[in-house]
Length: 406
Image 1 (cartoon, rainbow, N blue to C red):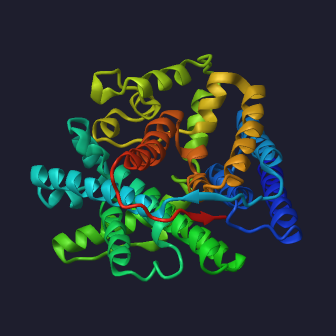
Image 2 (tube, rainbow, N blue to C red):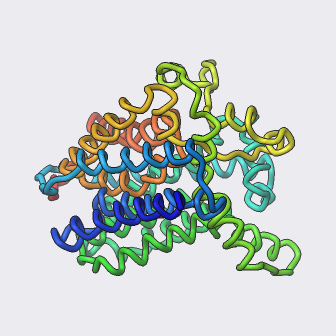
């Protein structure tokens, strides 16, 4: 009975939120609250669908998670205000090309070292290779940064149909596909659709819902389908059991991993230690001689079977769990409100590409960690393009008119 009551709590919270915010207030689906509510529906029920029963600890975890989402919504609720800003699109284009083709150079280094097998091996094996790799391990993340900037430049009337953009878009998609990187594919598609919706033609909310649901399919079936395709390339034999994949992936892995991590660590309290370690490793990164820090690796080493850990497999982590083990229940809920405020502030900023990106990485709450936010999202996706763009102001590049965007 408890399981049924918790499901009713989840469905009521999500359903009422979507009704009031999207339908009654006619909010665009491409804003943080609707997207977060949509993804929450799947991540919150994953554990229940697997185990069909709940303990006292399970109920406590669900109440914390639902309350976090509610306070996030309260913090980010409000009108989306379009502010005016100016952007030098010519320098923006050069910035995007510099970043993108640098990522190609890094991929060529990996190709030179490992051959075509680098793109055909499994994700776990590639993770182990990255442990001994140099700067080329960041190729995928740098390519994502490049495609975000180029999306911002090209997804405008008269520019979207250019051959160079079409080639880069399709090529990037194929690279992310071979690397089995679902989040990269989602970020590429989401930023494109967000900008298309804003700059070219409004997309119906129903079609947006279909796209969001397709990202759920990508999250659950993506790796299995990609792996089967790679086997086909090698052996010319294609065999896949959709029923088993749905059961194994949709119910038993993607949407309950965060809950199992929470359950294993619900008695752990580190008092902000992982946040301090993250800031330290960000300021003094591992490739410059600093200490490597990863909650994902720590959790895999201590809570997963040893043979899986040695093969490079993991369960990721969860930012929600990291908040809890660092600050406890009350501060975790307060953080939900403050993060919601930050999201709304970013959405109302003139640089609307920011809102396109932050919404596309919402599953980070369930599957990421603060170190990922600092090292990958902040340093590579934002700080690197910003520094290159600003540096181009110092070069004698032919001046182009600044274009106002809203």
